[in-house]
Amino acid sequence: MTENTKKTLPRLDESLLTHLPPFSKLERRQIRIILDQASSRRYDEGAHIFEEGETAERFFMLLDGYVRVVRVTQTGEQVTALHIPAGQLLGIAKAIGRESYPATAVTATESIVLSWPTRLWDTFVADYDGFATETYKTVGHRVGELNTRIVELATQQVEQRVANALLRLISQTGRKVDDGIEIDFPITRQDLSELTATTLHTVSRLLSRWEKEGIVESKRKRIKVCDPHALVELAQS
Amino acid sequence: MTENTKKTLPRLDESLLTHLPPFSKLERRQIRIILDQASSRRYDEGAHIFEEGETAERFFMLLDGYVRVVRVTQTGEQVTALHIPAGQLLGIAKAIGRESYPATAVTATESIVLSWPTRLWDTFVADYDGFATETYKTVGHRVGELNTRIVELATQQVEQRVANALLRLISQTGRKVDDGIEIDFPITRQDLSELTATTLHTVSRLLSRWEKEGIVESKRKRIKVCDPHALVELAQS
DNA sequence: ATGAAACCTTGCGCCAGCGCAAATTTCGCC
DNA sequence: GGCGAAATTTGCGCTGGCGCAAGGTTTCAT
Image (cartoon, rainbow over all chains, first blue to last red; front, top):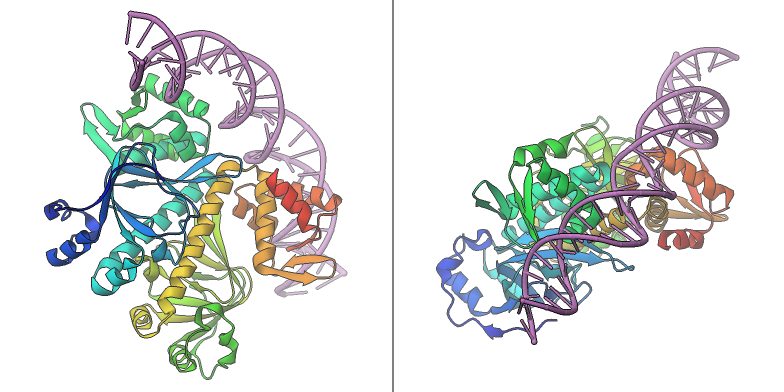
């Protein structure tokens, strides 16, 4: 899909991986074997890692960065289904019995991604204890998120949805800064609107109002939440 | 949850099961072993098979009937996430790495359900080739449906969503009758509204209009689609 | 039969949030 | 440091569909 460096991993410090949830329990030896078979690649912000409908020839792990999982409608509108933070697997069509990717993965920041050919999937599942369990937990977690989004879309007002989206973003990918928590990657009003099924205009109006009320501060592509509790209030009502 | 007969299967005609997709490839011997460990139970219409949040002590297979998978919000509104037709597994928390059911399963008609204790899950996966593959396909299919619902909720108008919902229902569970296709189980305006995130009033208005236009015919709890193509038109625009 | 409960229909007014449009700010780049 | 593209803000009018309310019809239990 996109250009960029592509190479086999030369010698990747495995201590880097020990804190990543899906593999922390594996033996170091197993990690070494898995890593030796991985390719590493850097993607620019906005690059597509894989496209909806493509045959799933590889599966991926996000080492660094953030990825949005989106679907595009016939009319060209984008809908964001999920946000994936570093440390998680993605494109794991095999884990849900699919041959092709069910959605498109777009980087929200510059990102580093490991990948393996799909044919290795069954080997990993068979050879490495815990691999299957962890991946199914990932799947379960995402199914939960999808369900939550459906319920939100079905029952909540725009204001509540945006508040919820912000809360989720800061809890998943928030970075503590002085006087608040900032979303750790560049995010536009447009992105937020695709995440909450509304328009960038409405998001802009909401953020303006919240800024007046001291709940958030935001510059271009940056949002800082100063008063999370106020957002929680808004999200409920 | 609900009353009704509960018993171990005495002698279930296994030819009954050979046409059910998830197991058609298994050896008859394996089917016999699996069935011998199952409990069978009948549920009345509207009964709850399991509840969201409950520990997943059993997993289920719908032998006959239809099941709605719903979530209830804090404010008591119901949102239907999926419809499950006979022949499919449900409550398979184990397949997505969960300990508890992520939603509630409600019967849409009187239904017959097989179930097994969750502890047998790993055994089945290990012993019976194809079991894992088929269940992950089921999961994958449902993830696809959830995604589709999100996109629909996010981008479509109420009229299109209702049209789509009807189309999906008749394709999944439609029964050919003279002069149209009828949804094979009782479904109220309320049910449809919970499936499309709108109100029963709006659904009622739409159906009335469509009836005038000759697209559908409906009585209490029954909907027959006479002109599916017109619905497809409506669903797109 | 009769009553009650469940389900369906329809009218009316209102408003959240979209669409459109135009102005403004910010950023990256030559 | 000035230009163009991208991102953001804000105003204004309109409308889809919700909320409320009232009345009708079907089904079922007794």
